[in-house]
Length: 636
Image (cartoon, rainbow, N blue to C red; front, side):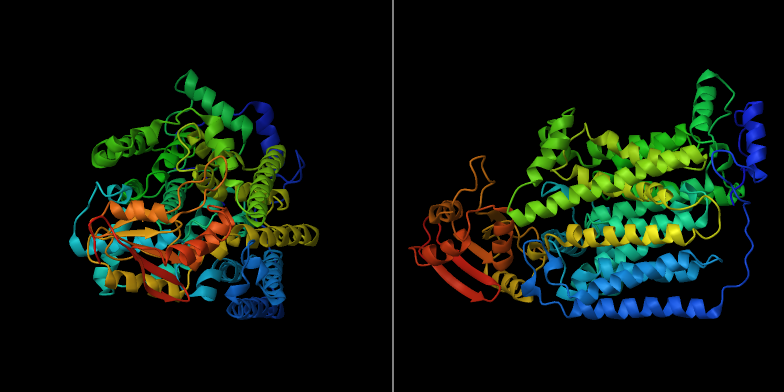
């Protein structure tokens, strides 16, 4: 139960009528819906119920892991992992969902058991890749390992190399971890990053949800909903995942320790307008403050908050600019009382971009500001670019769009119902809407909407569960519980498709990694390395010691263009020592799924160009093949 901060400034007094309604409401009468007492006393939960629910969690975990370990990767097709999962996997997911809902419906609140049920869901739903494949997913994971390795071994930031070195905070952390542990090979950490990131998110997500909702069970349901709908896959070893974790932690800290108005709400017309508007929209706003910590503790927490903000700014390009509007709307709605923080976030973010990341800023002005103000291009244009590829891939994309629409629809309905019931909703709604103000900025490489969905999801999840969660502190009741179970089952099934729909090309095999290692052992430093299609598990070492190119050009409006031997020869002639071309099975899967090249084009390159003059096959395994292409003046 939250209380008014002891040092909070006065809020705008309610009119006599709302005061009488508030008094009536807290007395248990009906106004816009029944409001039971704040504290509901229940007897102890029978031990057999706790043992049964704990056993359900254990069975779900065991069955889920066993099902994932039995998956045959060769069966993963165009719609991803869902094609290869055995029926027992979905039984495990359903048991996990049923266990959580039943625990949520216990008469006495059971946070330890609730956390256990959520942890089981996280393992089953978000640790599929490391359990099945045992290697990092996504090409970017390997690239990030290479950046961290270079910074740790050289101690240098090559800011002209690429954007990573202009925002090195995350990679410095990886280098520090490597140096502190003496482990140079962080491949296992990259492999298990999806599970680790989601486990680290649990505590700050729950703390944030407690500040956004009216009672604890709503908060637990919101966290559960987040994990059910977090399909974007930005939980791999990446600056985005690190920045998101820090952002959620920062917001939870601020809403817990520094909640309240930053100024006397009756001091002038503007502050009165803000306070009255927030109170009319959400009558719980004046009562959402936490007890102020002692001055010494508040100073420490403020320093920690500023440190988190600086770490976000130093690690990722987008996340700090998403934090700015969130902090601003929280300040203007009386949810954080540190007025300098949004200003500091804006100044530091822009200052880092202009001064610290100067090399990137000056060389990419068109990329940064070329689409500024193009709302349609940054939304519908970005979406239309992704609705392309094979029929299976298009189906996955449409499923993702449908899941996003369902989440936002449930969030809007939850906000509406909470407004009608006069319970907390405004802070979560502002958290959903604030990141969307970045849409006129730029498309962020076509990924802006994906990132904004992820950043707004903790807030949307807390609103969405209000459609089926009561406002009182007791159990939701079996009717609502059945609704939660049905909704969770639908969302979990959709997320298996949306999260793992690209698994056929996002996964890599040990043969492919071995092929890349052979390439690094063979190619002299400074060599030109070419991949057929951009989807190769490389750059995890010797990040700046080679030059990298891709053979397939971006698809034209007329469709993908066939690859030719001349394209490889032309690239090789730009290097005096020729070039090395690697073609892997993951490249072939990506080409087929995204239709980057005509069907079978990479196989034709292997068959036709491999015997062409100047081409020589160096080595081959089940993961692919490596060619050397002679360059100008190269007789080898």
